[in-house]
Amino acid sequence: QHGILWFLHGDHHRYTKGHFQKNDTFTIFYSVVTMLLLVFGFLGGFDYRFWFGLGIFFYGMGFFVYHDMVFHRRIKTRYRPKNKYLLRIINAHRTHHQKSTATEGVSFGFFIVGKQYEPT
Image (cartoon, rainbow, N blue to C red; front, side):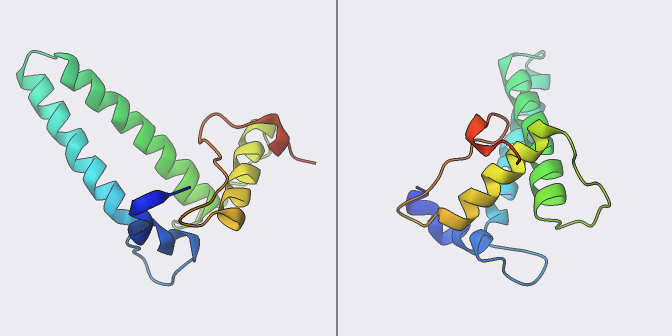
């Protein structure tokens, strides 16, 4: 279930045309949060804010590369995963897109997916 932010995320499930989706608002928001955490954490002597920011940054990069580039092909690449784990993520995300609405849905996790999505 996606909840109240479906108005931003819904276009992502409908494969809209064009380069940008309302869903990209999440990327902008988390990028700003990440930059603030990194800067203020650095200025604070590499305190916890820096490390939180770094963690969000690495998760975001993994999400961007695998979700946007490999699964949705928003940036064209020739890479086609053959690894069972990576294929499981693709199967889970495909199911999530097919069966999810604003009020109901299939959670797919992102880096952790169930065995039920094992490629056949």
